[in-house]
Length: 213
Image (cartoon, rainbow, N blue to C red; front, side, top):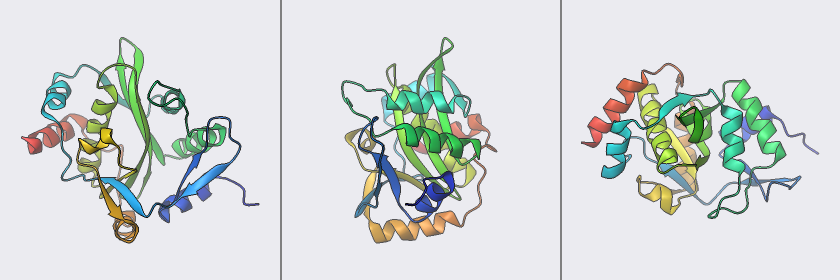
């Protein structure tokens, strides 16, 4: 039996494969390689007008990588729209290790000293693999996503993998592409050197919103 490790996880992502558990109590991970892959276009990313106003107003304290474990645990909490989670103990352990290696990142929305929304994902070369997001107040996860895209664009990333297209992501321009096309884009992105942390976030968000008009 192959031992699950952070290194194996990175190799899987580089091959276009990602894991999910059936539920929080599951002791097994399943590997996915969808025939059609959901991606968010970094250059064609659409910020709805109302959300653009919210981002400009800046209702949240935006932080990166200050509470990764808290973000992934919040993503694992059941909600009325998502009564079951695919995040189990192995997912928590492996992605926390990836974060400690500098290969997984969190985007966090804080308000009044409380973590109220955010997302996390894996970074590999010029590809970012969005894993999950959560929101405890209106628009918090959406604001986190906008700030993520701004940072990825500024840092020179080429691919934002959303895994599957949902109604929530469709409003931002998410689309499905065939597996072969995804693998071509992934291979090109993996060859691009990037620095997730080396970004002026204020300038990055201004550039994104300015590009949106």
